[in-house]
Image (cartoon, rainbow, N blue to C red):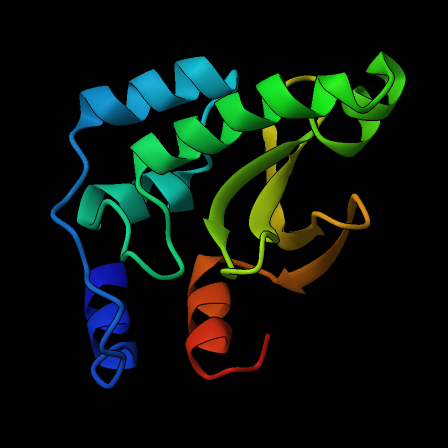
Length: 145
């Protein structure tokens, strides 16, 4: 489902390139390191393509992003600020300018898959951009977000 959609949307994009599917063990490893189960739509996407080298991150890139945030931001933010502004997001894609597309992690540790947000790294703020993965991918590649 996602692979076919993305193939159509990136046909004129010389930089984007769909990757092979992500093995289940890599998805589980990423979930363990991130600390939350991935929403079904993110798991389905990773099972079809492990990123596209443009918008969508691979499982390894998701891990790298989380680890970078855990290393860098605690040096600059108080623990309460980090817990409020950085920690509650599961980022899985980027806009190339440092902002990420993400799910909010709820207090119970689950990811809220009812909306996809853009997390703006300069403001430490997020806002809704899509209701689901299909809408995010479509809107992004049509230059609507």
